[in-house]
Length: 488
Image (cartoon, rainbow, N blue to C red; front, side, top):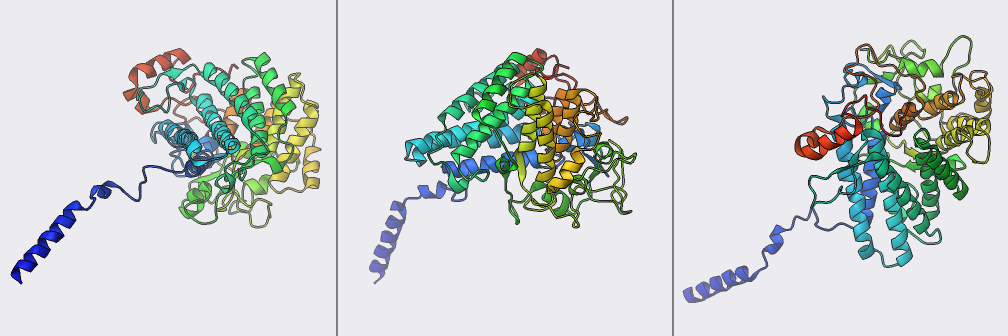
């Protein structure tokens, strides 16, 4: 009996030794391969969160453009970019999360998708979003890693010339537009923005091409004219139904990041800035902008009030970002958990066309007609009735012929700035182009009004040689160094 027990024990040991133990090295929670759809959705989500967030560690553009003001901690409203490593965080979010996920998605799509047309569509859409992400990097920093970016064999990538990058992005966008087959399929429900509709993505790409074209109008008017007219002829947004909206969910963890920062957190960090309120509520008997109650609440005294830029202000005495329960809106309030992220919209499109017409480009209308369409589109997007929007447009300080600002471009620039409320990154890009409205640095600011972000500290300390070359090439790694497109 004892011998039988010993034999059984030996058999058990042998069986245990022959068992495949290499599976112990596999972490089921961290797969080594990921479907292209997962990578694409994650990239869309990360991109939308980065652009719409109000987190002071990531997106402070509402503060820079004086849409919002801070209460307790005012470093960011005073242009302190370094204390929270904000340039590093933006850089990492776009390169490491958005661009890298899209690169990997493009790599995996041929394996995941059998249909050749669908493969082509999905790769083109992923590339369109890469172009979109690079646009924000190059208009924020200037020269950036591009030709050697996203390559793990090149840990110290060179920085490419900003203009060269920008023009290559336009070339890529044209190729993506040509590659899209509107009769084919793409990502389906994995595409949160357009539900996998190639026709919608082609319209988006042409409209973004329009945007990229007008961005360089002061730098290269001939190129801008060619790009804008080509995009317009191919077809751009014609209504708010075309808007590129990322629909966040009503429950965590995929909620609107503004809700996370302003409501879920329970913090009282942000109020309206007096600068934007001075245009929404001009006074002197002029009626307030109908968007005002959609943008901000009244304060504890029942009136609209905003804090001075950079100042330490109290929460209760000032208006708060959105949230008025008395004003219904077709898209809700920016403080709702499911409020969508806006990546590109019809109102912006019409203001681009207004500027293009003012510059003499052929875009199917006058600066006046496109300007009016932009104002109405913005008003109605936020839930203002068509009648109230038309009445606002008829006011002497808004009507194109007599609007505030004096010059044609100033008039367009001001209304575009107001329409880009809650799109602070774009508002900053446009304010630098128009230099209007004039935004002065607060008296307590740590620097001049920033016209670019400084390079991440990590690049300065690790990618030293290439960082030094890039800084020298653009005229110094300073917030006051104007980028190539910003010539004024």
